[in-house]
Image 1 (cartoon, one colour):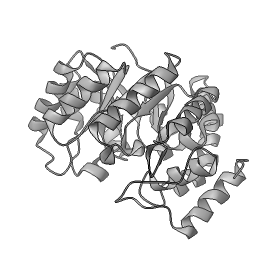
Image 2: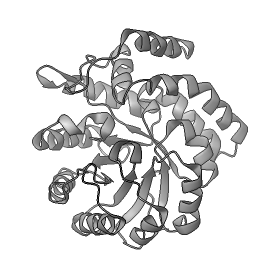
Image 3: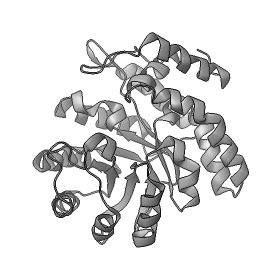
Length: 295
């Protein structure tokens, strides 16, 4: 097995913003909130961070800021994927320059590519990156599924060390673990499947939930790795209503509303995303209150 980037719970961070741009003051407070509550890694400029609507220079500055404020306390993983390989190479170079510990690269969306094309794409990124690469499979968003046999081929590359698996298919996860679970780390990309995926050998979760409930999310993975499986399963069940509320509208609309309610910046999203609908928002806040959150 290659060197592991992290074990446990990583937050796919929101990017606090307002009409003037990125809200770095709120971001600094949010980073401290995450680390103080035991989070094991931070993922910046992923889907939850609204990377699709930030300019490349903004993305680079956000990554630089997070790296500097974290100051090696936990790994910082930068999302660098797009549907243009040349852009991914430049984004990855930028992330490496400002000190990211690893990069997270989603499968190309819209134009998609064949499985052979995906191998060529990810190999080019891994060859160019000076830090480890985490593959990201989320077919519900991208329209393309990175198949287990393709991952097994990519796992032969020394710089491809992990995959964030968010197909939602436990059958696909089982096949993935069978083909290459001893060659590459697997991270859950589905908050509702954290404990089931850990039971199949996943190394942790890259989470939306932990933006809002970092302490509880870490308690779940800590319990699992301590051998307290029933406790971990109980946490999974207890957190499921909040997870469902966080995905009642397209991510990151609900989590942005939740984090704003906790006091970390405005509930501001860049178009085409718009703030959460009132009915869904009240359900979300209700679930947060049930867990003792001050909203």
